[in-house]
Length: 468
Image (tube, rainbow, N blue to C red):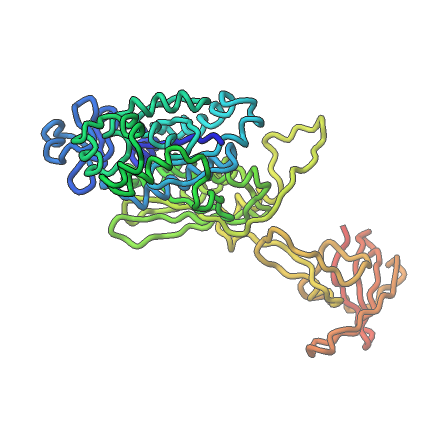
């Protein structure tokens, strides 16, 4: 079995800096010590382990951000969600590592070269710094990757050669245990592997023996492999505080691009998205944007959000945004005419969604049918819905224009009227005390208009609508 390990030494910092160009020194600090630094900081001599006071002396304008292990773990999960489209079986190794099983994927990608090329694309798109190594065992791949090996090795002999030359301080051993080995004159990992494990166990304990066994163990880890979440939920910490809603376009586009990458392979679309806005020293806010037909494409959702953001006034600077979905549903590509241009054309659902985003949800109404024979109660207005079962009480012809209240004719249609069809008796409504008993006719009036008339039991005539 073959394994590939990916190590991201500056995952949190790279993810922050990828949002926008930042040409000054920037570091992540944990317990007053630098744990991640960008290239500009490294050029000034600031590296991992440098104290915060020393870093400030080397660069007075350095930008300092607090390191958060939970955020980095969340970023690692988001990256795994993206890589799941390329690799079937892999394991999270928080806070900065991914272990991938490559044996099953080499046939699909016709070798390690094609597989590695596909795997690199999302890493490059996100601007991540990474180290990698392949080996016959998970621990061997991890050790070589953290040592910055950056090689794809297919033979165990090559792996063992590199492990033999690896300094004991770079073998991911406990610091005290590494010092004990050096005091015994074992400066490389190969020297420790050459000694009898029983003797090492008696002298230094079982921890070292278990470690040496794992270097040779090719089996998969005992923990479960990564499984992607069923629903999309992602949060993005911002490098800069945003004071104008128009500046949300770029970080929001990044989230929506990840959403499209999540939905498209699963053939899913969503009816509503919720954008969470986290403010500095102010309560968080949620913005809901819907699409009546459902949508998965980032470009379409971005245009809807921009219409909402035009009306948004920020009560305080924004420090983070999050995106969640509601109403996931399956979709299938619609068949289109071969010679009919579709670019730039809006579907009914897209038009409704744009109007709702621009004017507000309550400003857009749709007419729905109701299963009732009484004409006044056979329809109603409501908010547009993605799917609604059309119910119709009758198959008889109905007018295009129906008056809210019937208009009295004050006379019986005479010889100048032409009765086209009828009578059609409608007697209904006894259950809710709105009972009607009418005989409806379709007739043409002297002006040539096709009308919908009815006659009551008292021989009164009313005009109820016009046919187009």
